[in-house]
Image (cartoon, rainbow, N blue to C red; front, side, top):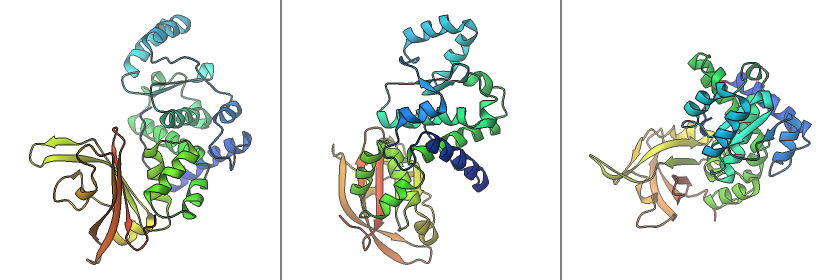
Length: 298
């Protein structure tokens, strides 16, 4: 599984969320923050392997135990994925070199493959079954598993409800991330796309030197709140470089954070608005958060 996701249609999403909610109820985890992963796995009748199959010594031992037929599958898959579901053994393998927040998401993603009935019938051992699927079906299965993980991880709309009661600021994202034990990347995206007020976030790749622009940061992902989308539309920039409206937010000179910084954005009617932006360099990516100056609170 690759730790990224994209959207599903509304009917598909509802089916996934219904199954995810059922698991939360079965594990008596509905409304519990952070999500009790052990209880979730117990209700799903799954276990996380006590060792990491991503360690070369573990690969050798696992192949010896499972049989030679899985050796080529493991070899081809490990360079592309971070989590593995062995449905026949009801076992999940997670790359334990990842951060705890990413491990949580990946574990729930693999649980989604197991819990979603139409996927469970086809997935015996991660990639061997997936290779037999049409690319569009395989992609849909990944999106479904990602949305399953998101719903369970944020306990339905619990994250959204808590965010609504907190000041509109990056500091609130950090507090929620700590409460839900998720990655900062997942938390800030959830914050923006579910918040009732105007705000947006951008996840940038680490700084690099672009041939024509000089120093720059490529845009990995953008999330906007529904109210931002209706007034400003979705940002379309693929690169942030000197001269871009968001450039003053990018931490430079060894800084990890950018304090609240004013900049101007133009809405769909051509009206300019003062925004306040903040940023955090996680070393993996640069996370930008922005909202109107009038709504920003510390």
